[in-house]
Amino acid sequence: ETGVTQTPRHLVMGMTNKKSLKCEQHLGHNAMYWYKQSAKKPLELMFVYSLEERVENNSVPSRFSPECPNSSHLFLHLHTLQPEDSALYLCASSQDLLLGLAGEETQYFGPGTRLLVL
Amino acid sequence: SQKIEQNSEALNIQEGKTATLTCNYTNYSPAYLQWYRQDPGRGPVFLLLIRENEKEKRKERLKVTFDTTLKQSLFHITASQPADSATYLCALVDSSASKIIFGSGTRLSIRP
Image (cartoon, rainbow over all chains, first blue to last red; front, side):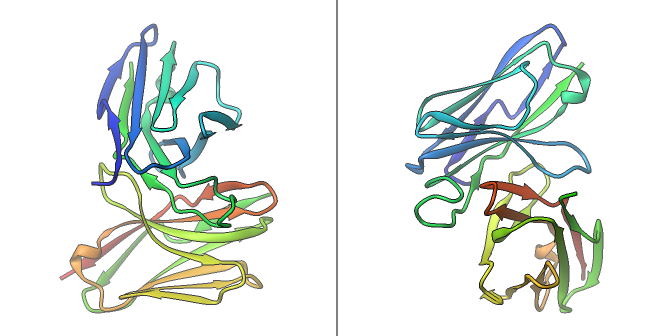
């Protein structure tokens, strides 16, 4: 296992529910990411945080709301989701941003949360 | 339009042979490109990184090449083993937009 954990691993929710996904990294990294992975589709970057500040939001619907209370924790709050939002949600971290001081970065992914919206 | 493509959705080869996976891109300015391995029910795991000014990188049985003229990266696994069976993802970090774009992956199966 990597140093990135995600809970829950599986989640089933109705369209009117509110739920949250949690990610924690134990690597001392400064950057954290949320991705969506749907069947037969590429990984889609949703949000990027650096030192607890959001630096990227890739046109994600407002029913997804990220929160980064500190550099080790990242949340994705879910509200009034649609069935097409069913997917694997992956969290990742890296020492710094992808084009930071080092010029290159490796991302470490968590195991993901498998979400089913009914 | 911008796109990144992994040409084969699935690839089946005999154990011991070399597996070659392809990643092509258009209308990106890559700073570097990465290859990841993903097993079912797990997150991707980083394998290799190659910069835009590098031609080739190796790590044990793995080799990556990068041809910015052809706009293509090749990923090779030599002496393949059934344990190498997984989905392999290429990911490009674009220098102009500071963003990462993933290919849809190639599912590799190594038969004994």
